[in-house]
Length: 284
Image 1 (cartoon, rainbow, N blue to C red):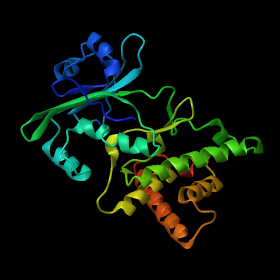
Image 2 (image 1 turned 120 degrees about the horizontal axis):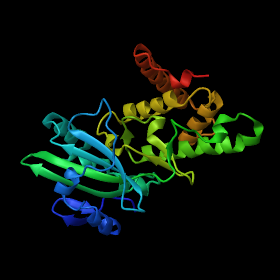
Image 3 (image 1 turned 90 degrees about the vertical axis):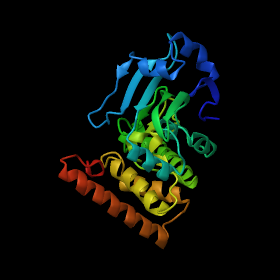
Image 4 (image 1 turned 60 degrees about the vertical axis):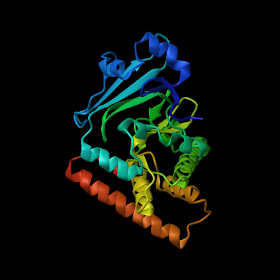
């Protein structure tokens, strides 16, 4: 089962026992060692807050590529917001993995956590980290859809239908857990070399106590919005929705839901259009 490691390698530092020897070789066995680490490739973005950092590197000589996320003294307001949204007081890094077991049980694949850790300073978080394994051969659906989605010829129609059903099943299983994703765009769905779908950026995943349906519609609208019009036809979108709903034909409730999803997608598009951004579902 994919879940946060339980083996405590050092105070506040938890690791998968399989990778402990490599972590020891690299000096990554304590919080001090993690936060002193300067190797790898810095993945900083302009919009990344100053208390966060992201680094990519290979674990050992022949090990997997991993992503190291570090958080140093997150703003107190941000921490309180996280506690309320996730309904538990945790350090920031924990939210990247605390729902993986639930999702795994539902058949929703997520990246493997190799290690994580945290340190408190009184009531609030001082620092925390999480080390996540790269999805082998994985590419986001935003960057690359399967070849069958780029070809409208009858020869690949079955492969095309299979992929649409695959994504619909994945999203249906995810929503069946009661979870929602604040940014369920195609950039957060990865397909690996074995055609297994993964969901990433799990710190954005939460189980809303209120307005669950509103957040479900937002998820579906973000998927609709980010699916490029030049590759995903209206028939594909209808097939996705019917399979997601497990219906053979649209019911009145289905039609109402579709209208709400499309309205939300258009509002997202109106916002992005003002920013000068391209609108994926309008691309042809």
